[in-house]
Amino acid sequence: MDAMESLTNLASARRSKLFALLDEDIGAVISCDLSTKNYLSGYYSMNDTYSSYLSAAVATRNKTALVVSAADAGPALECLGDPTLIFRYGLFYFERSADGPLVEYDTPGFKTFAEAVTAAVNAVAPKELKLGVDGRGGADLKALLGAARPIVDISDAVVRSRATKLPGELVRLRRATQLVEAGIDTIRREFKVGMSEWELAGLVASEMVRGGGVPEFISVTTGPRSALADAYPTGRKIQAGDIIRLDAGCVVDGYKSDMARTFVVGDASKLITARYKAINEGLEAELAAVRSGAKVRDVHLAAVNTTRSAGIPSYRRHHCGHGIGLSGYEHPLINEASEAVLADGMCLCVETPFYELGWGGMMIEDTIRVTEDGFDPITTIP
Image (cartoon, rainbow, N blue to C red; front, side):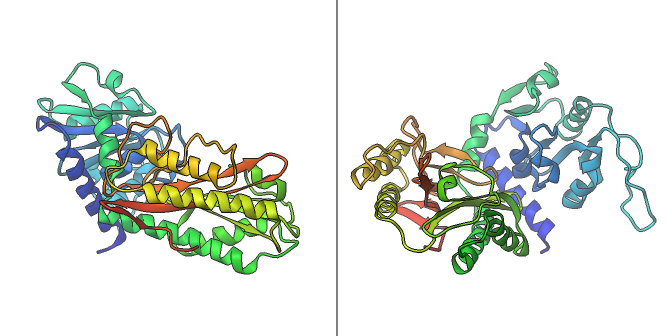
């Protein structure tokens, strides 16, 4: 089985899972949320890095049509393999050859995204079918489709379906995490005084790409810059006593990773040691609270309260983790306000970062899969 076939088979399994959560009279679903488009079709587009990109997936239980820009039609066809399921809008020229696919991608597509969506819906979902609409994404699908057919909002069902992961999804999450781990291990072996944040980030990026991943974000911050949370690396050169905080993620077949580690150049000060011990104990308490049926709020409070009692009395966090999958942040968000309950098969990033401007920052972030009585680690390195 080649990679494309594997992705389309996984998409078929994901569609079956979603439709099992819907009323039986919903015969087709549509979403213009970029990651849900992947969920329904198996197609991960380079254009998805642009949040303003308009595209859509129209899916029945058995197949998915894609609405894409004319420039995106070639890669989309490579994934789906059926030109009748590709609905182009706009203008882009793919020249034809005798050995190429029998498609007319050297002519204009539909004039507008709306026209392409209407054509895709009419082709895949007969008008007598009730249409489930995912209300998230860059277009108002309900307004676009009008009152031509019965419509029901399925946004909540999409979130619930995506929250727990199938085996094929877990494989890709593990691979994406392994590539970040390889980069972290390389930094652990090679960092030395005088190296720049850029050089350290380059080590991580190289491992990601070499292993088949696409870098999503690489935040390497050192010394006082380690307090800057989500910040790009710079030319700052590391010095003895510096904290090195690394938070990074990459993408494998659309699935994201997100993990973090903290190092010290040379000997750690007493304050660094004490604060790291506190956030580590907070993370351990958070992990100990994880299991199917646990209240997300309780998991968050276990992390925060333990970090406070372990050495950072002022510790505060707006969240201590999140779901992960085709999006970097998926359901649930682990915070005190959440009313969610953990379920077997959820994949989570759990974290207890600490940032103090002018001093520095540190974090540990692991990825796990929730089980009935606890969790299975996806992150494997210390």
